[in-house]
Structures are given as C-alpha cells and as structure tokens.
Length: 330
Image 1: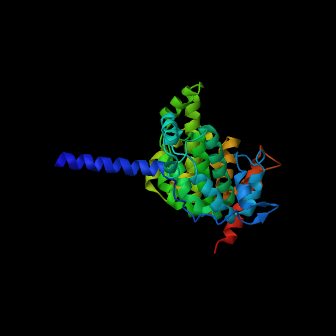
Image 2: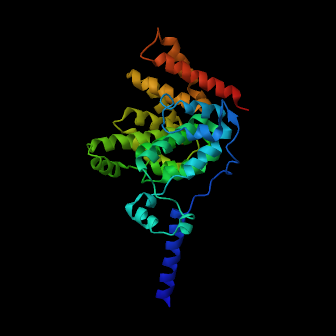
Image 3: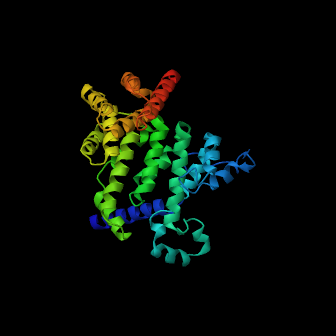
C-alpha cells in the first residue's frame, strides 16, 4: 500500500510539473484589451511588437514604448509570458509536438523556433521595462521568473536584474531572486562558453558582470536582506572593479552601519579616478537614499578644476539626481 501511494504521488507530481512547463503561463497583469490606443500612427501593441534588441540606438522603437509608459506594460508582460520553456526548446518536444493531434496542440505551447533569437527579444523587453522604471511595477513577477531561470543566458538574466533595479523599491518582492543571482555561477558559465568555442575565462567575466549588476539592483531597491550580505562580501575581493564598487554600495544599503558608510566614502576618495567616477555614478543610480554622501560629492566638485576624466560630469549628475529625488519625496 505504501509503495502504491508513493508511485501515485510521483505520478501526480510529474503531471503537475508537466502542466506548469507546457501550459501557457498566466500573466501577472490583466491581458490587454485589444491593440491599445494609437500613438504616433501605430497602436501600443504594434510598438511593443517592434521591440527586438536591448539597444535603443539600433532599436529606436524602444524610445516610443518608453514614452507610452505604463499603458505599454501589459503588452510587454504578455510578450514575456509567451516565451518558450526549456522543454519546448528540445528536439524531443518538437518531434512529440508534430505527432500530437491538432485539438491537443491548441492547449499546449508550440515548440520554440530559435532560442538565441528568443533570448534576444526577452532581453530587449526587460531592457524596455527597466527604462520605463517604477511605472513598470506590474511586470515584477514576470521579471522574477526570468531571473530565476538558470537555463537562460547570463546576459538575458543580467538585463532582467538591471530592470528590477531600475523599477526600484517597488520591486522589493524580487530580492530573494536577486540573492540567488549573487551566487557564484562560474562553473556553469565556463561550460557554456566552452560549448560556444570561446575561452572559459569569458565565463568568469560574465559571472562577475551578472553578480555586479545584481548588487546594483539590490542597492537601488534598497530593502535590507541579511541573506545578500555573504554574497556581497565575497564580491568585495573581486578583481572586477565595477563588481567591487557595486557590492560596496549594496552592502551599505543592506546595512548602513558606520563601517559600511566608511567603505563607500573611501571609494569616493580613492587614488584611482575610475573608482571615484563609477562610485559617483552608482550613488546617483541609488538616488535620494544616497543623500548622506551629498556633502562628500559637493566637496569633490569644489576641489576639481575643469573636467577630470569624466568625474565632474558623474558627480554633477549624481548630485542632480539625489537632490531631485530628495525634493520629490513626500
């Protein structure tokens, strides 16, 4: 009896898992009603359908979607939800699909046509949602799903964590997923790059880039999370300058104790001008929460003569954003 119960439970679990993988995803936002209003001669749905690359210069339609703002979010989420699952990308699934009766196919996801092309537009959709910013809050559950999909390329997940950071405090539900992205993925990424015929060292660089972007996302969201601290402390010893700076800023956001404040202040006083510049950039990205560093940034400006390796521009931009967001706070 016990053996039969275990077998029954396994079958039920398998059916539930297959249903989750194969059946269309439910959207985290209500499905759009029709193609939407017309903006500059095209419907919202049409503009969103033109998003294909995470680069606003090469894909200028992104600027129109960002200008539309919140009304475009349900259409962006709908496209994200229509992405294929890992199983639908396999040859096995393609063969099984072709042998399945048509009336059954209507209830299942079709096989993925081109995973690399699909990941390109997933990255583009995440990039666009990040550009929309806090108004893209309804997309957070869909973005969390992508951040958790370890079978996706690191670059796709990287655009996703950046988008969550740009949405800001409204994306606080994403913090557990971001903590997962802080984990060391070097071995997995090395294998991925070896399969691509590229040196394994590129996997190390990709890993640090993903973890650095994740640290910045945590800093921008700003919700204290003790589970993030070990991963951030590991990044403090990184050879990647950007990852090291972002981990320092995120550590201060997770735990604004005097010692962590001193770590960030130390970066602003570094002998390396690039460290000073990028620390200012990241504090600007944090916004009003970085107001405690405004006096230090102001002192940096006063001591400068002319443009110094882009530092003046970075500091002025950071101060401008900190002041603007501070004045907008209720």
